[in-house]
Image (cartoon, rainbow, N blue to C red; front, top):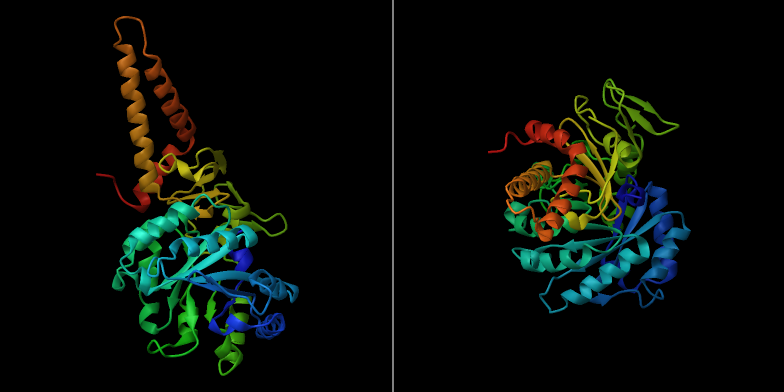
Length: 390
């Protein structure tokens, strides 16, 4: 499953009001949300290192109550980083949520401003954990000293939920988050407390398969009609088949004009985005281990090169767009190192070859032989997407 399977087209946040809720309160909230067309509830389970759920028998029971009403329930926490010396407790809660639910979201805001060091701690501990990890944060990271934080977090993040709470923020978040190669979906604010906010205009200009809504109390109150409209709008949008491509909805197979097929999660990725019809697949998806030579910690997975990008999948990351420039450099350097070793071997005069040298050469050649299948495609993608390497 990817985050779209959990979130649906219109997830709704439950905020601080849930701290003392009973199980019955969660049942009621789920029923109210379903009437609005909401597809999932994102439930706060902890504030920093303090776990919530005393009156519901624990956060797991609260999430189960929502699931029983037919909605997905996704746990989220508010993270203060190490402001109160509880960063390890916060990370432990996120790990427990990911292991229990397969997905967890951290709300990271002002406390993390400028703290790439704290983000690095989170990344190192969450990267090996199976499950999806999302981060909701500022929609204007350049104004919050957050780009170093995003760079540190990015390897362990599957998706972002930027808080697009105003018209101003709607005009900048695509540029801010589009550079990180991760899926991102806007969270809209039911109000104008962050500035002028033409909500439907923001929604319609999002080009996103889902819209997150903040938050429950205004959603069931003054903004209920608007939430219904948003849910209907997103729910009625057909998948976008690129012009000239063919989609077999029964088999769930997308076929490009060059007759190369895109299947499973890669197919969903293309259909849920405004995909350039000319960005055709250059070959079928293949399995690689590691999936990226330049980032072997990702482990094994699946790769499909397209003319302008490369889609990849791992059990940890789900589907994502590979950083093709970074990967091309890693492949180029590995190939160059292997060629240098071959030259060294050819120049050996004694006829006795270093076993250490042979072992190193075999390792590098294994990677480059495996990567040969996608090297040419990645080079093409680099040239089209990021320009010629200097």
